Length: 285
Image 1 (spheres, rainbow, N blue to C red):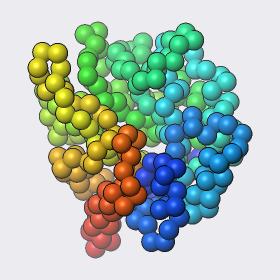
Image 2: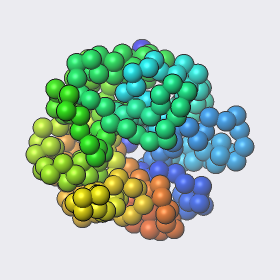
Image 3: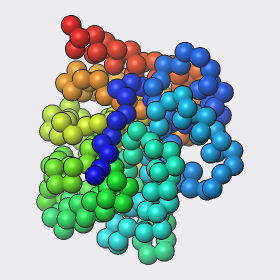
């Protein structure tokens, strides 16, 4: 029996230790906090003491970054066991991972790398998602990637690939709107058209973050999903459009690099909360 994701339809933030005091202060605009699973696989210490305190106040989301769901190799059973122990310890409201790969052999590449969308890859990802959900005894949410290259051998559009994984495994989807914007710009396509094709019925959580604007070796514009700046206005617009279509859903502000003071991150969360609240009012009316 798998427990479904039950994150509140509110704004959340990725937890950084420097924000601990701010998160414990009164009247914050968030309903949940998200942690990277791999940072909490030790037995104890200050990280767990802080996490226990936060879990008493907020719903908790666990976000994996190193399971390598898209790898050609079997999932790491030791890593799975550590994930299971972490989820059993904290009973989070949600768990998510990336549609990506990050390891080969004994080498961990510390990146979220793209994969070709083929029938073979689809079968492998479905197998890995099934194993993960069976091991954890809970539904996982699979996140769409930010991409900078595409495989000539891909035969399935990304949105259809994600839909097939969700339909065949019962997993939910984590829609990263910034990833949509970054990928669309990098490939010279329309983010709006991508979202028109996205299987929104499976979305249980949304991520929002900042990106960097750079130039590639040929001088062409290149966006990098960097999580080190405020959410860009076009991304807010895409987010508002998605929420208008599907209703209020758990929404996380990601800010992992050049971490700002708590009031700056709280302001981003308030913006998301405002969009969610207006949507809830329309739904109630």
